[in-house]
Amino acid sequence: MRRHLLLFSVSLLVPQLAFAQDDEASVQRARVLFGEGVQQHEERQYREAVDSFRAVLEIRASPAVRYNLALNLFELGQYPEADAQVQLILADSQSPPPIRDSAVELRQHMAERGGQVTVSTEDAPEGAEVQVDGYPIEDPSRPVRVIHGTHQVTVVHEGEEVGSEVVRVDVGANEAVTVSSDGSSGGGGSGDTGPLFDGESFQGAEPVASDWRFWVALGVVAVVIVGVVIGTALDDDDTGRASVPLITWD
Image (tube, rainbow, N blue to C red; front, side, top):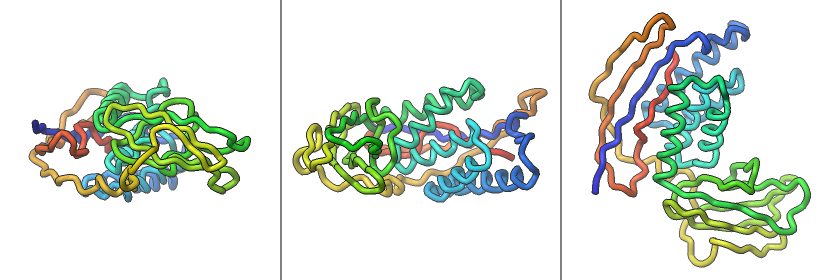
């Protein structure tokens, strides 16, 4: 069965994005970086867009910036960090409803294309850090969302790897893996798991073409919505581009 995915690009001009307490130079720098990130996303330069939105976050963290970062991480298949950004959006009581709704939808797309890993450790030194595909996990006891495929779970202490395990996760699965600092491991990492996920494999999704664009004014708060509807036919196991909006800042 084949399906069509639609990408909507949304521009929100709201007072909360004014960065009123920041100095003018920082605001201008953030605006430039934000615009570069949007352009890079439209050109499917997702890794560059991630760098741009991370740079904006260093100036000012906001739900819109976190969402755009999460969306581009999603396009790269880097679900652990993308889901962490989504969680921050949903935990923020100040997140605007449109961004909150888009974050929920993005999480649903991750669920449809991946599974979860639950990590436990044995004999790990105090203060050791658990990483999934190189991304540090704040609470390893909670399931970590990953794209379908093969992943590496690592325990790091004082900059040195003290344990590692490879695990394969299918769509909808929740794999448990135990990593021991003595070199032994257990859980869902046995056998020939195939090549490790490297964050690059899913950048080659079939390109999509822009069909139309419209502007709608939404009242006294000067909220402007730019819709770009992009359709493409994808196989069910193709990661593709999600039908979730990119937030732009004019």
